Image 1 (cartoon, rainbow, N blue to C red):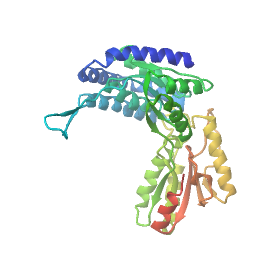
Image 2: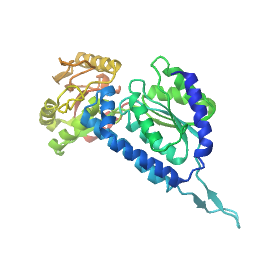
Image 3: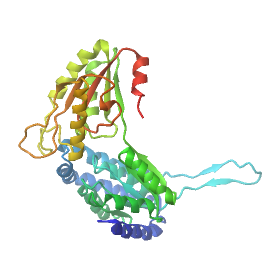
Image 4: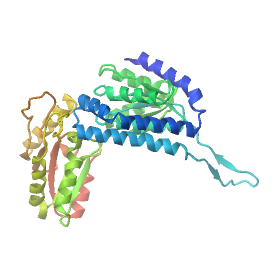
Length: 372
C-alpha cells in the first residue's frame, strides 16, 4: 500500500468517527472486552503468526498475546472511568467544568519487535476514548496487525474505526508523511528510533498534531558489591536477551562493581550458555533470530569496533551454524570494556552485552549519564 491507501483509510476513519464518538463508554468497553476474549481464545494461532513473521520463540509469543490482550481489557474498563472535573472558579457565582472528549482520528505507527502488544497498547486506548485509528505496522511484521484487525471486527468494532495500512519499506517514508501531515489526523503515536521520532515530530508540526513518542534508549544495568549476584544475573538474562535483545527498554550497558566483577561474569555467562538458539516454533528454543538483516549487521559492526577497542569476547560473537535460515546471532558477552566502545553512546537493539567495571557509586552514576 502507499500514500493514496493511507488517504482512503483516513477518510474511512474520519467518517466512522462521527458515529463512534457518540457511543457510550459502556458500549466501547463491551466490544473491547469481546476483542480481548477473542485474542485469548485464538492465542495459539496468533502466537504462531507472530513467531513466523518475527522469529520470536513460541513461548515468548504466547506471552505477548496475553500481554497484548491485557491492554485491550484494561483500556476497555478504563473507558467507563473517564471522568471530568469541577475546577474552583476565581469568579463568584460561576463554575468551571472539565469534560474529556475524543480528539479524532489517531495515526498509529508501531515497531517490529512487539507486533501485537505495541498495537493493542496504542489502539486500545484510542478506541476506548472514542477515537478512530489508522495503524501502520512495521513492514517486517504486518500479519499480526491484520490478524488482530480481523478479530476486532468479529468482536463488533465497526468498519472504519480500526484501519490497518501495511506498506513496503520503499513506501514507508510516503506513508509516514501522509500520516503526519493529513489534516484529518489529529494525533500521532509512534514507537521506534529517536531519529525517526524527530522526523515525525517535524512533519507533524505542519498541522500541530498531538504526539506521543516512545523512542530508543541506552539503559544501564548496575550491579553493586552488596547485590545478590545470582538474582542479578538471572534478571539480566531476561532484561538483556529477551526477544534477542530487541527491546527498547533492555539493558544496553552493564556496570559491575570491581570487587564482584569476575564472580558476576561467571554466574551470568553460565546462564547465557543455557540459552538455546533455534527456530521459534521449536518448543525448546529460548533465543530466536534478529528480525532484520540491518539489525544483525549493526550488532556485528558494534562487536568489531568493540574488539578493536580492546574488548574481549567471553561467549558468543558469531552467527551460529543451524539447520534453519534467519538472522541469527549468538548471545554475546564482552568484558574488558571501556567507555570507548560504541555501546557506551549507541543503542544496540540486539544480543550484545558489554560488562563494564566501576569502583564507586559517584563514578558509575557519572558514567551512565554520559550519553546524549
